[in-house]
Image (tube, rainbow, N blue to C red; front, side, top):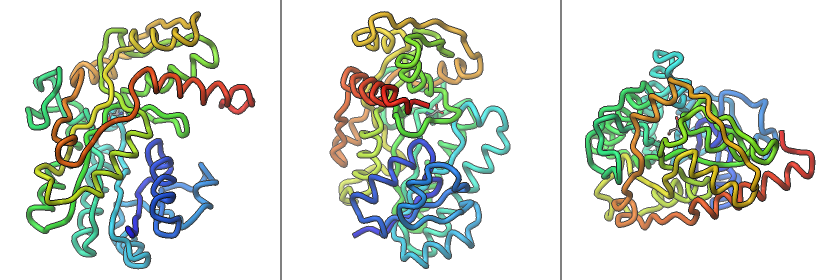
Length: 321
Ligand code: SER
């Protein structure tokens, strides 16, 4: 049985991944940490929780030893649009957090999961069916930290034998904890707006294609890559994973299947549009499929039906905040 510690467990991915890991490995075997404890009190109080800034390697090492952790899910990172507002701070959080985690993992012999992103690619990467191994010259600070993080994780594996693994997430769509400061956030916001007002003002141009994934598949990828047989892994940091590729116009059309009067309009945010333009339209995820059996369960229609069902039920209860 794994004994896991998560950094930043109360964010969009962490809050749902922490709950899934607790269901799978047992509540007491999954220690969750975050820099705050004033959100998602239900999760905070449901099992072992510690306040932690993961850049503090001394405190992190103490927690790892105390709980006899063998696997760290390192989720702390600023997303792409937030990172552009203060690039130096983004470098500090994204890189110094990772260095601290890798050093603790080296000393304590932990495995490490670190998410990378479609943001690790750049404008001269092949845009369609972007291969696993290709040009990575990102132009955003978020992307710079993601490429550097991939390289550093591979380095710790080769140099020190730390069992580092990761996936390059597309935009993650979910309905529990909202994302914060990402370029792909429109694809979450649009469902909330569709249920609330039947209309949405989109900050990306209607024809902007990006890869996306529904949260249950994002969680499945994080668990499956860490459970994969290491003998089968030719890659480690990080695997392309994809589930669907669409643009705002496509998404609006799918929402109209269920909310026929839904309307979309556009007020382009130049910063996020420039970031989106520098990212691939769609990823090719053959390596993940072959090396550890990756296969998504949700396509755009299945995800749209479920997002609208969950959010409509919540709105009917008066609980859609
Ligand atoms: N969802 C992230 C962002 O938009 C990309 O990985 O920043």
